[in-house]
Amino acid sequence: MSTLTVVRHGQARPFDPNPDQLSELGELQARALAEYWKRLGVAFDEVWSGTLYRQRQTAALAVGTEVVASEDWNEYDANGILHNFAPPYELEDAADRNRKFQKIFEPAMLAWLAAEEHATVETWGAFRSRVLRGLRRLQDGGSNRSVVLFTSGGPISVLVQAAIGAAERSFLEVNWRVRNCSISEFTFSKDRLSLDSFNSLPHVETAELRTFR
Image (cartoon, rainbow, N blue to C red):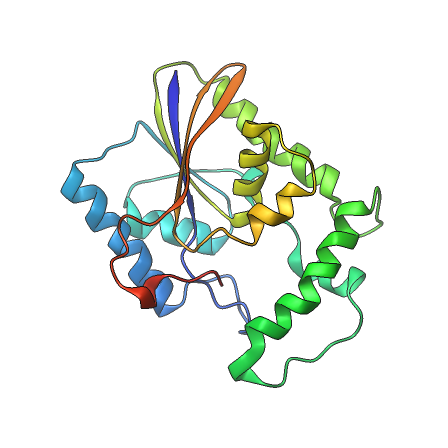
């Protein structure tokens, strides 16, 4: 059996003009993870990442080595889902943007989950298939490996769903709970994936570093 440690990227900048980068807090989260692994003497045989900058940036700060980047581990198209499945909206109140955004995003995600096809947005089915393709690529790489993967909440939720054989709707329930720079641990072989731990933050000691968005 091999081990797979999956890390969600640190806090990004979702409401900025360029959201695909870590915030200062996100950088602190990734550096805290690096220090935690250093104290424990943790090392990995392989380091994987999606191709999004916030994912690769988290990997660089946490492990500081070259990664194998694959689009299979990129997040779903959140902007496309909002533009095509949500009614018109405005987020004028900066102090309350996260709560208002969640009220808009949740029904949009439910509509996306139910859509079997779409002309411009990657469907839920295509997204899930893409993530599972990335998993198969890891599973085909041989046994007795220690792998770390830096990705986003969506792919992590697909892996959890696949590991426990849960219903499709459970993907969203998991997705809302994945914290920034959290660790989820799996064991895997060529034809099996098992969940050992989910969404832990052993490297984060202060409340201000615990974020969801």
